[in-house]
Every structure is written in structure tokens, then in C-alpha cells.
Length: 358
Image (cartoon, one colour):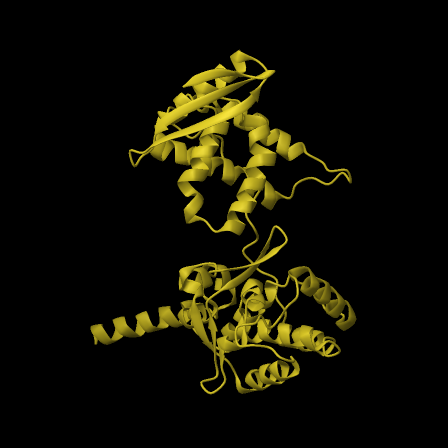
């Protein structure tokens, strides 16, 4: 470690050995005083020792490094936004070991009492998301860095989880909506694909002609589309279960072939739906209003597909395989939609016992 005069300011240089044994160096310029440079130097030493006396801000850097490669870029962007705007301004300068339950309560009250320029507060779901992110960081400190207790867990959550029941369209509502989309072929075929396959919006926007096998009547899902920093980015799907092959009905095969035939010069690996998510949100608004049906989020077309399959009598395991979920998620999130088998179970147990007793 060394402190140098750097023109009008001060510069701190920190040399260290990383986990592979390689010697490395980092530095920071622009300190107004030597004392500021020395304070930064001390913080780097504490961080290098993974000491819980480091500031929350320094620990967040470790947290990012530890988890960075395991989490998808778009998920990190959401986390980073919360960390930068809602956590660091309140806890950034505090020592990790000094954050107390009373500090968490004070922060929660700030978040609960927040109002934007229109007087609107944070939603209960968003409040819960904020607390969960703070608690996740502090849990990481407990599990791997020797923090004795997670003060956020001790205080408990604020807000509430998303409603378990998910909005969806009935078949009749969907048919009314899709009739209004026929004036724009791209929109029509995009929504047809979403509704009849249950794929996610990002998966739809990543589709290429080569993903379809019209002889086998299948659709392969192996990628997802995101927009980062003004650039189109193709990533892996949301989870391992999301990589799947879906069988599609004859009419959808015919519709997709019609659509592809209308796209002049499209190549096997070109994107088929070259639009933004916001375009389809706008189209959803337009179609819902024209059809006189309730407006549901685009993601709820996926819920509509799942509810349709439940109505047709398919099991949670079969549905989960089709939509790239785990069957336990389907059972938990859509339990209210499956026909109750409790009476049938009781009757079978009654008959079984009767047979045993002769």
C-alpha cells in the first residue's frame, strides 16, 4: 500500500495477492486529502481480510464478485438498480458489523413512507422485493463472512408477496382479442405463438426459422432475447428446465409457415419477430381495448395457456415439461384450478378398508 501526491490531489495504490497466488495492483485517484486516501487504503485491507468491519458498500463489491458469474445479466441489472438506489444511500457507509435491527426498521419506514411526484407509494410487492434483496446480501455475510446474525431477517419483511392467483384469459376472451390483431400479421402470429405454446416473451423474440421442425411439428426453445444498453442480446433461457422441445398443433404449424413465407429473404438463424417488448405491450393494449376484454400482462398469456391445459385435463408434470417449469411450481401456483380429488381419495380409502375387513 502506498499514498502519493498526484498533482493537486492524492492517489492510493494497493497491491495484493489474489486467490490464485497472483500478485495484483489496484489504485484510486482524485482524493482531495491524504486522509481520504488513507481511509480508502484501510478499507481495502479490511476487505482483503474479508473482515465484517468493512463497510456495507465494500461488502456489496464482494457480493457482486461472489455471485456475479452465477446470475444472468438482466437479473443483475434489477439487483444493481435496487442496491444502488435503495440500499447504498442508506447503508453504504455503515460498517457491516454495526448494522442493527433498528437501522433496518428506520430504512423500512423510509421505504414505506416514500411517495413519488404523483403521491404514489411503492407497491407492497416492490417493498417485499427491496427487503428480500437487503436480506440476501446480509445472509451472504452470515453464511460466508462470519456475520453473527442477519438483522434484516430478525426484523422481518415488509410488503407482501405477489398474489398466488394469476390473471388469465378464457378461450372466449382470447378469441375476441386475436380477432382484433388480424390487421397486423406480425402481431397476430406473435400472439398466436405465445397463447398456443405458453412460451415466455423473451423466448418468442429470440425465435428463428431453424427452431421449427414442421415435419415433426415441434418447436425448440434454447435461447431468450433481452435488450441491454441499446443492444440486442441473445442469452440462455431462464432456467435449465426452460431448454425444451414443444409439440405444436397443425394449425399453428400452418400459420407459422404462412408467416415465414411472408418474410422476404429471412435466413434460418434470423430473428422472426424483430420488434421490442414495448411494441407488443402497446399491441396488447390496443387489442384488449378493441375487443372489450380485460387487460392482462403479456406474461399472463402463458398463464392462460397453462389454465387451458389444466381445463383439458393434463397433469402438472406434463404441463411443467411443456412450459419449462418444475411440476411443483405448477402445482403450487395453479392448485386452485386443478379439479379437487380429495373426495375421490377418501372414497378409495374407504373402499380399500372395507375390502381388507372383508
